[in-house]
Picture 1 (cartoon, rainbow, N blue to C red):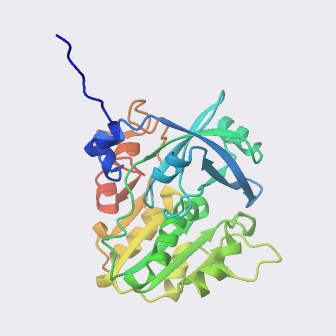
Picture 2 (cartoon, rainbow, N blue to C red; picture 1 turned 90 degrees about the vertical axis):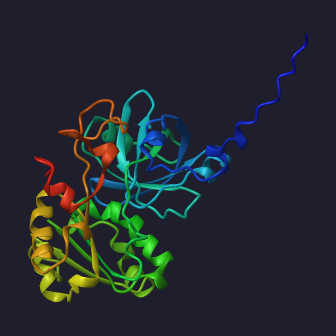
Amino acid sequence: MNIKIPEYDINLEPFMTGPPDFNNKSVLMQTEKGFKSEVINIVKLTAQEKLFQIRILDSCEREKFTFLPGQFVMLELPGCGEVPISISSSSSNREFIGLCIRKAGKVTGMIDRLGPGAIVGIRGPFGTHFPMQRMKGRNVLLIAGGLGIAPLRSPIYWVNEHRSEYNDITILYGTREPGQILFDYQFEEWQKIYNLKLLTIIQEPDDNWKGRVGLITDLFKEIRIDPDNTFAIVCGPPVMFKFVCAYLGNIGIPRQRMFVSLERRMHCGMGKCCRCNVGSTFTCLDGPVFDYWTVMNLKEAI
């Protein structure tokens, strides 16, 4: 008896007919495929940081690749290793993925030496994201310290692209030295075109610095915060979270409406290496975005 086996088309499967849900852990654990990609542009930001614009080579894969503000990818340099990097570009951009990379170790040091045309690999996206949908109709306060402005670029792009859905948008940004300021070439655009308020501050000014001097918490004196109508996103050194979130809590913003991004020793992106675990919580799987209430209940999270 001849049995004819019907043709199988994977594109008709339910998981292929709709957009992938990268925040579903069962899907996340299977996101092991790498995307062959090319560095198409590099913007030098400071002596230590560069913005890499990376394009997935396959046009179909490039169109299907989606992410939400706050998620990250694993960036692989063949023959050298891979590192987790927060996505620092618009989630609506299908042409390239922006990754702000600080030269800090072996792999990032090698990546820093790349030029346009270099071939790299991307896995992901991974992790949780900032709940931008929950913030609709509210004020959004974005607070960044140092390199923390990089993962904030995605929610900044998001609120601009959906500007009518949000009320007041305020960005507070502080660094140690003027030479460490990132993306200052966009500050005027953000304020005038994105219709938001931006305040910057430096801890250790040089002779050319004419702006504010002090800690990032000093900027709270210059803004008015409605605790009943405000969501906060905080990115930067973990030590900053304690002081910033403590102030926000003292004025009445619930910890469930404060969101922080933790990148605690992430290595594989899939919870297999156990380097980023805090008790039974894995930063790469259960985070990197957490509400501050959760962080306060995770011993040694920060």
